[in-house]
Length: 391
Image (cartoon, rainbow, N blue to C red; front, side, top):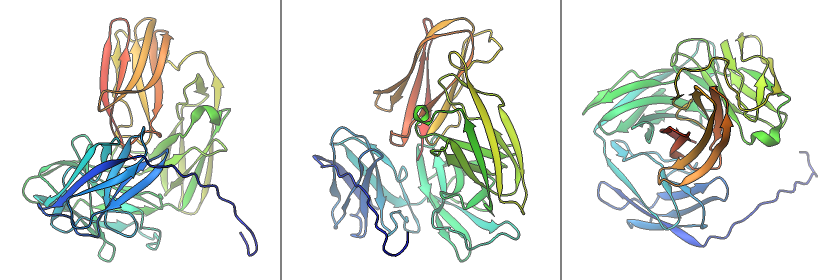
């Protein structure tokens, strides 16, 4: 925009008609007054309340929606856990109107520390405000945020005794981390050091265009790509499908393996996978997957000898995951999605499928982060598996 231009922006406001109760304490005492608690829902937005020396506060919300509730104590909407403490269970709770959510800041039992470094020759003045280092436990149902000192490039995460996966992420994807994750880090009354990450600046963009894909049938679709290698010793980038049916991945140098996204609705790509070699002196690359409409859900040519259901992938996911299963014969199949309370939140598919290996995607964009279950039901089988949505 330039001087004299005008901008019109429509804002939709929802009326609140109930509350979520939030109890919080720090080592058995009320939280300091600088703490706030926020409730978020992708459909109706956010609401918050403050702690003023009391244990309990209420967040005004609207009925009929599930919310993610978190603590905040910074001007930029994040929680910085005081040194020597950890937030029991991590900084996220799922709640419905009328529920009571509890947060406890407790003295830490251990610590995970590490050092961040930049890839040789990369700029160090990119946007780092959106970057976080986090430790996840209990199948990613609990997570703990670290404090990063950007002067020394050291970080520390105060945690309880447990086994963790540790990940670094810049949510605007200005930097990618190597490795993508450290798995099975055991903390037992002590400190685990040297969980280090190399940060690589994303100087290039790969546009991945989905030809003949209909956006209105896809909704909000996310996709991951990674460099060639054995996970987790790879770089990973993520992007959301745009209105021109293209993904725009911010990437660093390397050989990037790009799998054609599964679109459902009978769309089959002419090519399943492409590898793009990104160099340090090039900034843009273009890949196109040409889809054609096939009958039924995608199934592989090989017919399995017995019925099977694989764990969804990726898992955890944000917000799209793939569910794969095999049928040795033609079957009537129902696929349902349930939340942690056992409520059915979606029916992904119901109908007849031929023998073969089938893949479907579930998009959890409209749901809060947390644990969900998918059920695959046939005439003789009933399989339920757990999956984790993290936003």
